[in-house]
Image (cartoon, helix red, strand yellow):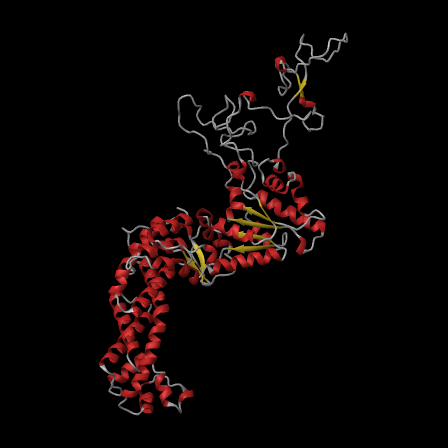
Length: 601
């Protein structure tokens, strides 16, 4: 299931409008950075994860970045250039082979031919010519008395005739290769594509956009079953033959493939070409052409390549980063933060279980509902991190109760494809650098390791079971508890501190001893700068110190304030030890905080 399908399905079930990725703050920041580098005359290589390509997010980012360029060339993906799987059957006049390529007079297309281009049909030396005399052209010459000997006598050996021209092979002559498609967009031949980008007098220098993952996943770079092939048997149909193939073709052989090619291989890439070789060649050739032309940065054509790691030769990103071709390398690393995930799930939370209008009326206190919603959102954000699809699924599935979180998370992990424990190497440090290190790049590409708020973090699918029937136990349970505790701390600590300040103000009217004496007796570390202002020093007392003063008789709080003070002490101690406030304690705390706000100071 792609990200677009997940969002559409969530919107259909809940009526909530999914937030487009381009509206998220982190995505906008990356798009601005790419646009700024392109405007400065730099090529841009944008590295994304495998899941982003599968979900369609990489395509959205590619279009968003390319659309910011005033002059741009969007190189179409290779799949759209292959008509083999969908081309119609040849017409009646095309013959069995669907027509013959134009020879142009010889192998070079200029009237000359190779020595091996002439063949004797009956001779053993070469079988590349026409051997059937019935295929010779017929000339209707006038009967004017001249006897022309054209060498086409049918007596004796068959004539020597030129063989059909063989198209040159190689990356530059691949009719569906990267340079050929770029040249088609520029209305030039493949050999002239790079030269035309730097040609003098050209109006404007475009940004050339390339989807590197499409180059890797093109039909011509893989073997096996292709679209349109048949792997079963059917009456009257040859098994495994593509539509449009000549009659008698071998199963799995694609029309136009070189002789001896394995079944299912299109003639679009060299069989031994490494992944990303055409992209690397374009980077290097354009860099050399720009250097030879002496173009300043403002007048250079630029490349925008969005790729996965496996779409490129392994050393290429580092070579580009170190100066090859004046290229800026952007990693999808630390791009999304807490604000992005919270923004993405905000429309979903209003339609999640326990958030209906009936449930809100049951909690008539708006402040209680506000705090519970904030805690729920923060827990989803903290657990899922930058995985937006998993965060949406969890926000829809989880009812907000602590005891159901593990099962809901397991269900969502089972429905959302993600990394497995074997994808993540041991993390020997916590801090995240500007880009993933060499030892983490494969794990990053699979989504197993992310940079979250400036720190390295393993994806939750690496350590939590992806099944509701297998609840988290042991280390997984401890890690989930720590994440929930961090989320509760982030939401509840400001509320606890604000309630403490208001409670200290009210406690000034319920002192049984002089304020200076109380501060000196119960403050663990009296602030030195407030030594001459005991009332301000009293307002700085922590909840534990206020509770000790109340128990010791120095402070006589009303029953409601005393109950709130005890609850604040318990909540703060639980959160300070990275434990979790369970549902009943959390409900009680929210209710007391709401009631305390309604009481006059």
